Image 1 (tube, rainbow, N blue to C red):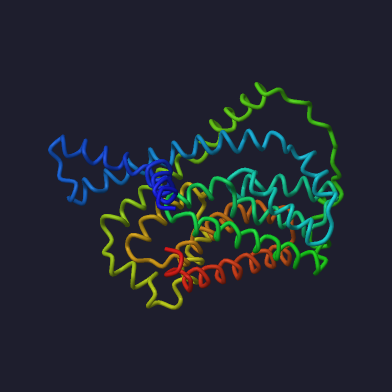
Image 2 (tube, one colour; image 1 turned 90 degrees about the horizontal axis):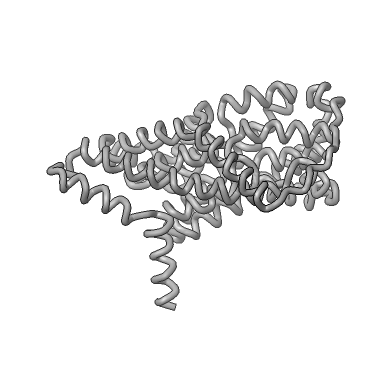
Length: 337
């Protein structure tokens, strides 16, 4: 058992967490005569380490996930979803959301396509909720920062939010609150040509490069904010606002996260810095979920497809779910970290 634990700790800390890289950068800065305890130098070390680490993980994960995704084009996904009914269909839709692109803006076109194709509205909303909130990339990245227990529970509760949210929308029969051009558009069900292994590898490479170019700026911004929090903001400030002494920390973090636009890769360094400063785990995860699921740009795009009442219901379901998850994680933090 001790051997397995040692192997797992090495995998989590040195492979996923790349602690060796942080030590290497710190050693390089020291060799240049710089004091790594200095705030400016510490910020440089944090920035360089996180940008490189997240970039490496990002490219690797996108390549693998895009290769998997090549087996699930919209036509095949629609056929898979069409075989299930009720909560089973919501569950499958939520699971399919885990192999789709990383941000809500990228998921909305697929949501529109599925809805136009005649799939139940609740099913398509389960997909829309899970796609940005829970993906294979988030599982690996969360493991690199918070450990396996937190990552697995995060994915499970994210899927529960997606399934419950889609089911509620289905039971309320909100089809009349979808814009008419979506419901009457129909779809052209063209069978995707069979791809060779080389085609899939090329597709995965192209997706990796495209996604990297799209999110790299947000990585830089996120890591920059994380570096400031990590090295410049006093720990007592963060603890006072987002720590256990503030019962409204989860709600505040959720509200702050909504107007922002980033994906899991942009929020990870901010979350890492907040955790080191004493912010509660659930509060941090609520912030991450709000940013990735309810970002203002994605809501603007979604409004083109659905009417205000359905839009408000979607936001309310996600917000309430995120807040519940935040308080849940805060309650069990001592048990899983």
